[in-house]
Image (cartoon, rainbow, N blue to C red):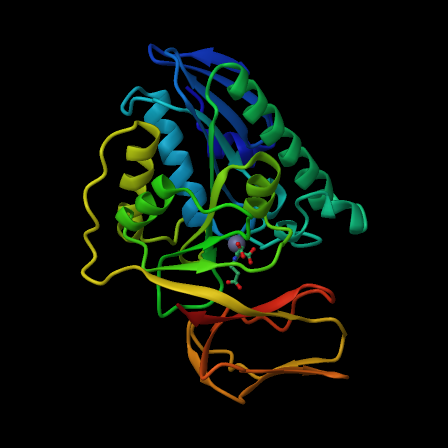
Length: 326
Ligand SMILES: O=C(O)CCC(=O)N[C@@H](CCC(=O)O)C(=O)O
Ligand SMILES: [Zn+2]
């Protein structure tokens, strides 16, 4: 039985690209792209992805462990499952990306970037997802889900949280209660379309999709896996259709919506959020968040919370989000 992560990091295909166990069939579709199907019929098609940013290693290790448990028969598989390790070249060098941020390229936006490894990979992942959802539908698995796992650059006042893409239909109740039971601290609702992988799966395939932020980004081998036990159990329960225990956290899940997408549209761009500010730090009305020629971003509500502030993004990309509670 091959180790999916080692195989992906090696850059080589496995000796056999298909196989089966007592419970499932697997197909290695390409580097970092593995499909698993149970022998019995099922109605869910689930995509789990990690490593869209190569330095966010804990979720990559988490998915690798999930694959090992499934392939060894330790965990029963009850859904059709596509496991994606997003950006192997950036995983090899422990960087968020090699040339450009892939999580701004989905939904065909890769065509707007200078062609590079990430534009090609974003296109390959879109096609792998399309093939998976279509073949799953043909096999009767018509309920689509996508969880894209990340860790953040900064520390955070909410350690574990989900980001839900903008969509024209309500977010699925089953996914929302799973996120609650998984012990997340907060949910953030986007209010504009984006080039993220979850926006793509939600918009194009009507999947119930969520970006999961699970802690702070650290290199391979440096993660404290105790911090990821809750989400590991939640993912195991999801793919094996086992009941998930009630939420263990003693505070209810908080809800935020995006009030402002801070875009760096020029080279000369100043962000007034200190380097050590944690995600979800509140700022008062009137506070100047960022400035560039002809544009000043200010806190407009009584209080807004900052998320993912980053002045060094490429021109044209998101340099942070401002949020409000609701
Ligand atoms: O810590 C940071 O600055 C970024 C962490 C990260 O990669 N977050 C995702 C969120 C995607 C979303 O908005 O759904 C990203 O920025 O791509
Ligand atoms: Zn990320």
